[in-house]
Length: 310
Image (cartoon, rainbow, N blue to C red; front, top):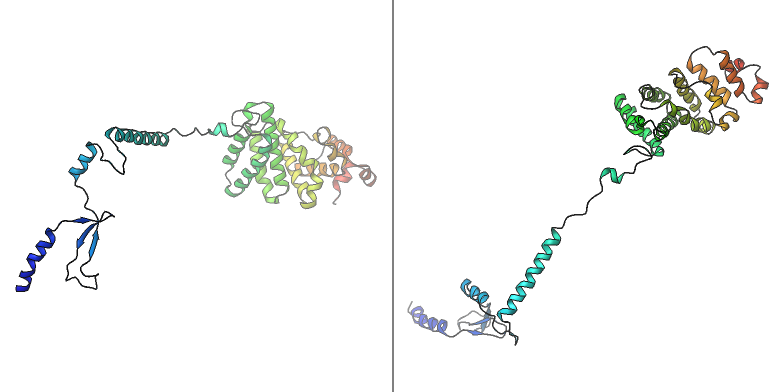
């Protein structure tokens, strides 16, 4: 205890000595001669960070002109200019960040119209979209929704050439889809198409041009889909039942390649069988006009061709 009392004046004297600051700006504190060698060299100095100025000193530093630093005299005017430059940078940053974004195109601007009313698609797209509509209908079974989708696609209320072209492409795309599909899918496709025609969602003027390509490429499609002719005959017979088509269109309005390809007469007989009524004399004349030279040699009458089981 006596030893500790004797050392207290020495400690007071050590703390009362003036503080030295080295070239790095750190305060050099004298170590006690009794410091352990494990913590550092005895009698040396330990660098401490300089004491931060108080809040009052910081306020005075801002309100008073800056002291000379490194030979450069920064007066209050220089500080004001610096603050103005900083303020202008902040304002430009905030104004650029709050700039109004570029206007995005609306839906009607982004989607082009296809030769019809506003928002109407082009006819070529209708042939693709009807297949998507039928695929969804085969799964959901919602006929009303399918008919509504076709109506929005065709827009038959326009009554112009564009709506007839869109309706023809819907007939064409749906017919191709049914020709290459399953036999159970043909009645489903017909259910949608019959309602669309009977309710005016597809104009009757669209039927003949819509069947042109399916008739022309029937022989090619039958190579991969042997039932394509039977499916197409079923579709044509339904149009006859609706009085939306006459049987003589096979002679008057069908493609030339179809009439001269050797399949027209047999296809006409398939249509008559699908229609379900006895052929009239006029019907036989149409079949006879479609028979090829080879068929006329093989069969003595259109009825013989109709009765052929091949």
